[in-house]
Image (tube, rainbow, N blue to C red; front, side, top):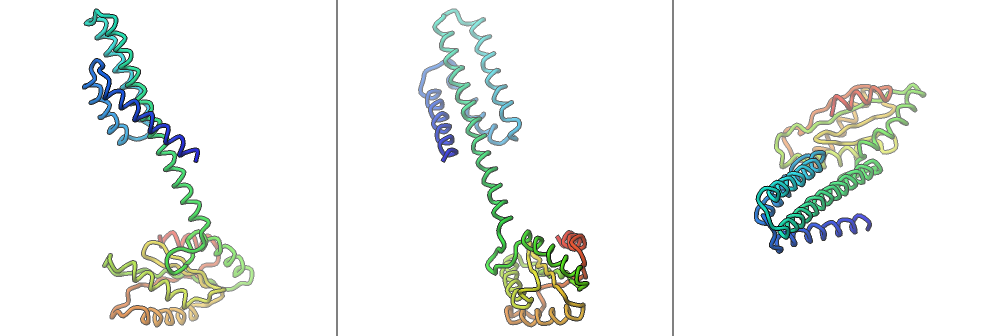
Length: 253
């Protein structure tokens, strides 16, 4: 609500100063409108750290121009007052537009941060309710501590989609995720996905058990997809702690 009020006020200020510049008969009004229009475009495109510097520079430059022109070419005091009005309106327009840009970018940053926090709080994503990477990592810490304490084996498995057809990759990925959730042991194993890969952490299992699980996984995929060639490749390695899992994920990502 507070941001909406600020944004509304700033928009009204920009519109008000812009209307005054356009409607009032002032010295160099055509040139001033041209500079103001170009300034809107330029301030929108440049990096935010340079926007204020540009705004102040263009305001001072216009003020210096009016001062020099009034000193050398103007004899009428009433025109000098018009120069002051012109510069004040131009200054108000540039500064209000700078404030508006700053407010819009601030709202954008806040929205991005909120999306990031929501993603961190989410446990599942996608149509298949597979774990998010953050939730996968959080639960993996507990899983690996348990396996280390009990001297059990844990295996990391990376399943990568190998098809080059961009239009079918997402459909294949969702099918592989469903097959994954149907294959793993729900209370023991973890699964997540990112990009075109699916990652598993299999608890209390040996290499032969991993092989048998991947065979069941292959059968599930065949039920989901009617493809002659396998649409994925598998890489697996044993992990015993979070550092090894992080390295495995790092190599995968």
